[in-house]
Length: 233
View 1 (cartoon, rainbow, N blue to C red):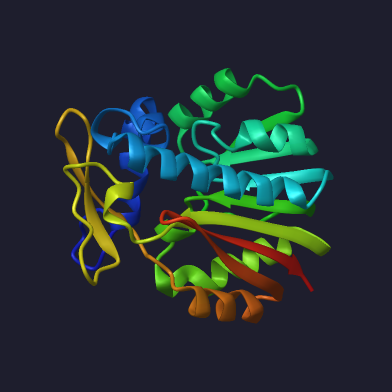
View 2 (cartoon, rainbow, N blue to C red):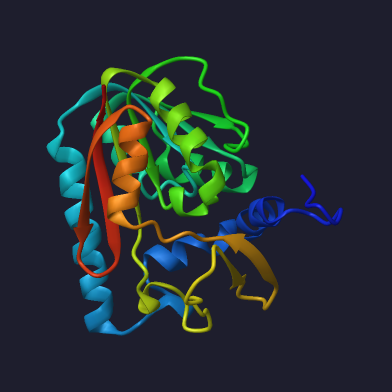
């Protein structure tokens, strides 16, 4: 994937970033190292995450779920309790290896997939994605949501969770630009990468979901997360 100048695209650089970041990714979610913002802020973070978890489980058990961008297994381990069968997809073999070791559940199967080229080959009762949609460029959003719709049975459930534009959600040495769909991310060793990061607004996201065939509600969890609970029409 190259841009018009022949240089690696931001999507290709983003994929390289998450491969390189795999071993330190959990520091972000568990508020460690550069992501530790103090006891009070961290407590609000974990309370918001628990609110999302409760909303996820409130929908009840399902037979099959596909998880996009499963990462290190933070949410895969929850889905393994919620569904009889979990299919976990990610582009990074490093992420998949950590996930498989962490989750170690017989009802989870893994596939290495470039999600920008993903086309579902079967349907599921539920599709879940955490902190993935913000890495989809706006010009690709409609097509990606339509692929999600094709992955679900009629009345299948779509559950998405992602980041609000809160400065303390990221590392102390990261800056969130005022108006941009790309930003610079830094690893612990100082290497930097350009990635896609879109802070979708609830109204526009709901409209895009409805255009893709979903009946959707967008919710906010504390200061840090939004989540979508939707049904495929």
